Structures are given as structure tokens and as C-alpha cells.
Image (cartoon, rainbow, N blue to C red):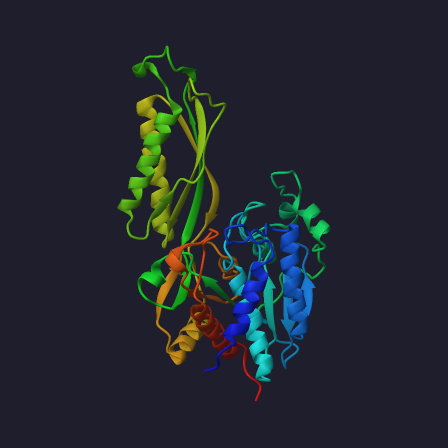
Length: 409
């Protein structure tokens, strides 16, 4: 089994981390910002130095290509993203991109030619921190989202995706989509399971179902000092009871069921006014589509009952739905065989987070490789990984990709 140059990969990760570096050791490269552009340009320079050619599609996805011996073969693709959260870590996304580059560099060192071409993809706006929804670069590439819809999205300052693409020079002309033989993505787990189980590699079997709901609670705004408690229609107290019901719902679907209320806003709030209108978000996750459908129905029923009890009006609308996504059996087997051959401690795992690989899995055969992150912490400036885990995860990626792409004797 082959092994990559871990010191070189780590040095590349640290060099990329200097772009958009934050005061507390993290990274801030919002999608299609100047820092994101600088990160892309560094990756592009390294790719050209590795003998790869570059192309960009109309949504700004960047591809670095190493030719194979068969010019007609579809590429085996690797990749992830370089954009981050506003106070993000140094490894989320960037590890998958630079692990793909290190695979190519290693093959160059060993003078190994593959039959199928290799491509490393940098997907646009995976995080969704500047533009929503998240992962729309891969969504447009795979046809899940219309290009014009994505180009019209605006950030909080009113700048459209189309304007940001032109400003950064990433409004490309490569045709969207196209044949992909297989897609492999290396990523930090972003959770504590691998670390807790003392495993180095997560062989990812697929992604769990995700459902986002927008909840609107309407009561009656009134004076805080003159309205008796029994006569109030307090939207916030009602929402508090609803949120507690959403939390307890997770226990009915344990251990896979997860519920989160991540945003809450009170309209025209005032210290001495009873809240009359507010909105909050609900994030539901489960490994099975049937279970997440049941969770959705339970949320609706429980919130409606609370609203009726408190004489409130509740409206629940779907915001985004991502079904459970199994990965390709052959690609997962290639990852498993690489892990077994290398002898690294591993376990099967389901991805709890959304990734570009979830979109790619509906387009071409796909698999992922997870490595632990310290304390399970991600989307945080303190996000960290161990260099040895980085190396071993990329060893797995290298051998799985080489087995799939074919080695020319």
C-alpha cells in the first residue's frame, strides 16, 4: 500500500490557513470574498506546479485535472471546499481539497500514471455562511439547483452571486456537469464519534436525512405591566414551550434522532412589551427518511397542540429537505479495502453533516473518508486535528482512488 508525504500536506494546510487567518487561530474565507479568491489562487498555483490543468464552471467551481492514459475515460474526482464560516477552523473543507492535491503530488513523486484522469474540485459556497443555501456549487454542478437561481442569490449586503463571481474572476465557462467516473471526498468528522471510539478512519456509508423548518408564532403584543398573566397571548412563552417539546422529541427517536433550534427572532421586541410575533428555525436529522418524516409530523402536532392551549397561531413551513443518501457500494468497498490494507483503526460511520459529497452521490458513484477532529469540535476557530490522522486519512484516499482509477503498468 502507498503512503503520502505527510509533512508536505501539513505544510500546505498551514500555508492555506494563513489566508484569512483569525485572531484566535481559525480561518475566515467567506465564499467568493477576496480571501476565498486568494485561497483559490494558492491552490491553483500548487496545482499548476504539479502539472495539472485548470478550469472553472459558471458557478465558480474550480477543477484541477491530471490526465490519464485513456483520454476518453471520465475522471475520478476528489475535492471539497476552501470557503469557511466567519469564525471557522483551518481544516473543514480545506483538508479534502489539499488531500486530493497531495494524492496527485504523491503519484507524481512515484511516477505512477493512472488510466482514468484525476480531478480535484473546489466547490463554491459549501458553507452557506455568505450565500444561502449551502453547497450550491455542487448543487448546480449536479443539476439539483438551477444556475440562474443560484446566480441571483444575494448576501446580507445585497451583492449577488453573479456579481461576486465577476468581481473575483471566477465566472467560468467550463460546461456544467459532465461525466464523472467516481467522487471521493476526505473530511474531518466534525463530531466526537471517531475520537471517542479511538478510531483513526471513518468509512462513511452515507449521509443522514436533514429537514429544516421555519416556524412562525403569532400571539398578541400588549403592555408588560397592565396585562394579567392569564389573559396574555405571549408568543415567546409559547415558543419556549414549543422548543422544549422539540428537544424532548429527540429522545423518542434516540439515538439517531437529532433536533436543533438554531435561530430565534422576536419581531419589534421591547423590554416592556409582551412578544406578539416571533420566528424560529428547526433542524431535524435522522439516518432514515421514514423516521425523519415521523419527526416532522410530530413537530407539527406538538406545536399545534401548544398553540391551541395558549391561544396562539403557529405556522410551519419547510425550508430545505435533504433525503438520506447512501454512498456507492463499490466506492465504499474501495475505501474499506484501502483501510484494511493499511491496517488503520477504523469504523463504519454515517455523515451527520451536509457535504458536497451528498449532492455528488445523486450524480455519480461516491464515497467519503473521515478523520477525527480534536474534541469533535468544528465550525469553530479552535477546530484542530492531529497531523498523523491527516496523513493516514490521505493514505486511505490515495489507495482508494488509485484502485478505482487504475494504474498503468
